[in-house]
Length: 509
Image 1 (cartoon, rainbow, N blue to C red):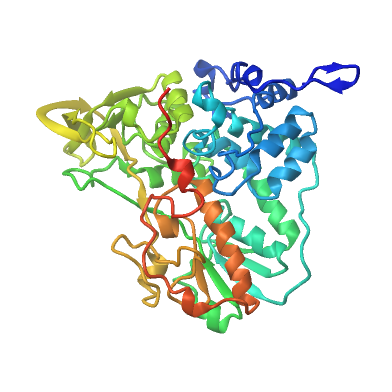
Image 2 (image 1 turned 90 degrees about the vertical axis):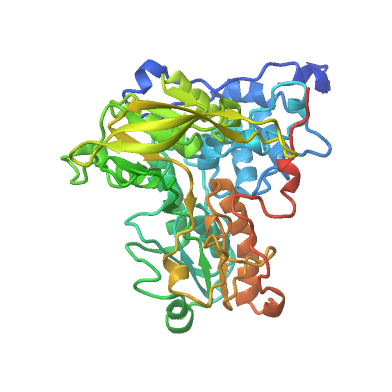
């Protein structure tokens, strides 16, 4: 991508790089894609990827690296893409990220690495996520070797509970260090939220299966259909089954509801149930699979986060005309910019400043309408957040299906039967903020179990950190007395430390 004069490279000025327009991701046509579950983004070509990589100015102090929860050396891999050495770029990413294909697709780059991109101060930020996806797809399509160096066998056995992003990352990091790792998963397959919560049009199943196969090829053992807390307790694993340490990564799978009248009517779902039944149990393919889901044409989705976008877009593909109800405005929507735009492209209807207060049922006990109060936003508070205020005005819409998408609380199965595990009032497992050690000796936790519902990449970042200290613990280099947790990590908030910088407010320009 660089010009040469007499074989000497001409240094391209940063302003010339930044002046190049961002290479937007090619997408499948909205009118066609709402009829199937094929992936929406098409992906960069090599030329498009190199053109986008050219826009990176290779900052001396890049904010994007601390802006990534797993610490990818972003400028280094982008430079390799610009030079056309995609295989080397893949190796560079894999130094710190076990799930690049998934992260390139579902991570909120607009709120993390791209938010603090220096190019983005005056222009559109470098499309870091799109480039990561391109490199990961190139690696998979060209069948490049992905198995890392594995240290000699330590003889130590570690149990990982949960095969979601945090659990899989912990297993990868611990196996690299030479430990014997067994992953216990309650469902019949691995992947966690990436399988049951994220639609195939965002994250194809074969990508997750490739990552699971990589772990199996590395020697990680998987035990499926195993509910820890029911079949075995944490004490059983640690004291009877021969595990030297335990890592809890059971996620946040307890749906939040509004507590309003009528939410127990037939046809009212949580997003967790709705998406799980479709993407893990194939409820959309009845009678080929014996797990039907009842869905009408008028689907109301409550909430406007990423999961709400997934529900809306899934319902559309199943033949409904879904409507999003959110008590704030579009500007306050917590969804990724890309996901919100994709939903709008797919003819999804949005009713902003609408707060459901009651579901109305028919004589059979099925939901038939939703009553909403019209809201207005207050002036911004000290944090800049505008609070939704009731107006006393209402409207009622006919519906035949409703889906709550208001986030999830921590899965309570383990904590309910393990009083030795200290938790806070939200049911979140308390851990030491540095080591991720819990109140039980030799037991660690990470991901949504310690933050509440968050993101794939945040869970991975915590698992990477926890793996370091699990290794120290089983190898006898860990001061347990200094790792007893005293304060919980607040739900939904990035823990203190090196990622704090990435979540500052963007500068005005």
